[in-house]
Image (tube, rainbow, N blue to C red):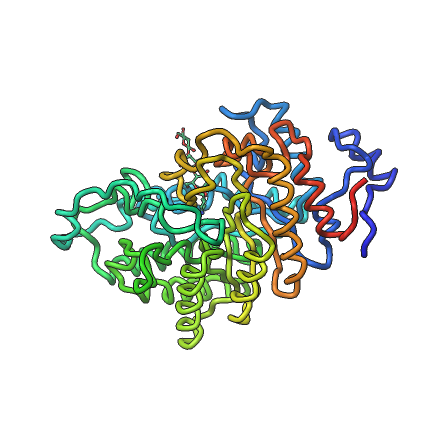
Length: 423
Ligand code: G3I
């Protein structure tokens, strides 16, 4: 059992000048050293040090101090998504500023950096899919699907199929209200994908250690459809996934290439992951890690996470927990998803009773499972610095509150590392 690392008087004195960190506060990246990196998703207010709509300058300074203090891995919550980094067609259609700032922030703070995400059905501009080929009648005539009905809590107590709408809002290539005009050909779309991946992954070659190459390609519905239907799969075909990994490998042969998805705590979705990845492996596709987002809720138990990790580990690839947060909102306990379009429903109704304790118990349970499987897990990344900046702010899903004060869940995560009690 490891003692809880403490900040030395020297580092405490140095830190005291820059941050308001308590000298005896344990440090996540230290207690998990030797097991896995502990990371956090950050946004441009942190990487650029600028106040925004949600955070004052003072709060941003505090967020930055907390990130530097607690974490040794970072990922951009939004700045490397296609709509952000490559909003327009053509060689001058890229917008690298915010992504460059993320990479500079990570490098200057000696953090390892993940890139999120190269190919996704959501947050991809319409121009990517546009062309001269008439869309199939099913696309133009299809009514916009209504929100999927809520489903009762599944036995996983986690992200289950049901609440997710098939895409994201107007103007994007994703499913809900998605682009249904004339389409690019397979060859045109492959070329756009290749150009995007080569340019973005090539720019950060040797700096971004791991890429989410394909994000959320698995279907949530039924047992027979392994892949979700998206403009990527419809125009290119199911081999868009293999092609994306191939292009990313060409762009940076040393990068760790990750497939990333949510809801893998659900046995049916997990089976789809295993089926898909085994096929990719049989085709010698360069896939190097599995990203399990883990947007879960407070009913997630040790047993659920233990089983999830044990089964994913059978693929023989490292597991990265890529977007961890634990929803305490009542609306998120019955049916949850990882889509912003469905987020309002999953964060409504106020918090569950005794939320801080339930959150702490859930964090302790899943981190004890991470520790049990630490030979398989290389990275655990929290999806946000604190509750105030979380995409699920009303679900208060993180271990720091909006003032960056550690919640009981923080002590629980520390306890899971040490196996002991936090004083
Ligand atoms: O930056 C613009 C700003 O200029 C504009 O004024 C404002 C008005 O709405 O929008 C801002 O963009 C928002 C962006 O977050 C940055 O805050 C988008 O509207 C908003 O949709 C976007 O949401 C992100 C969402 O992905 C969609 O990209 C969330 O922050 C982010 O946490 C979430 O993350 C996803 C992962 O990438 C994949 N897995 C699921 C996870 C949760 O949905």
